Length: 104
Image (cartoon, rainbow, N blue to C red; front, side, top):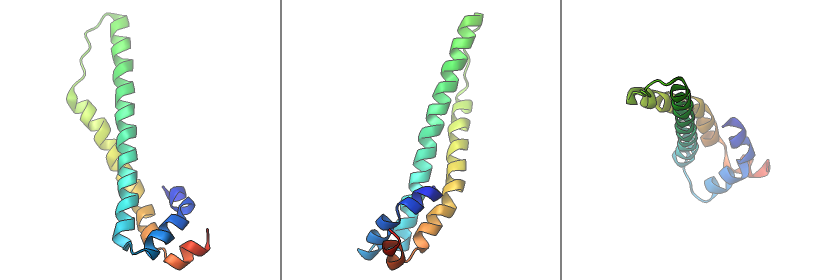
C-alpha cells in the first residue's frame, strides 16, 4: 500500500485540488487495503478448503470444514490488511495537493 500511495501521488494531488478532503483520501486508501485483504483472504480460504477436500478424499476421510475456520481465515486477513493499510492511508491524506502534483 505504501508503494500504491507513492505511485498515485498525482491522483491524490488532483483529487485534493478538486476538493477532496483528507478524510476522503484516507477512506479511499484504507478501504482499498481492507478490500484487497478480504479478497486475498477469501481466495486463500478457498484454496485451503479445496486442498483439504482433495487430501481428505484421497485418504478416504470425511471432509469436515467448520465455518469458524473459514471466518477466522478471512477475518484474520482483513484485520492484517486493515493494520497494514492504516499508515499508508494516513500518509496519503497528509499530502499537500501542490506537493503531490509537483512530484508526478
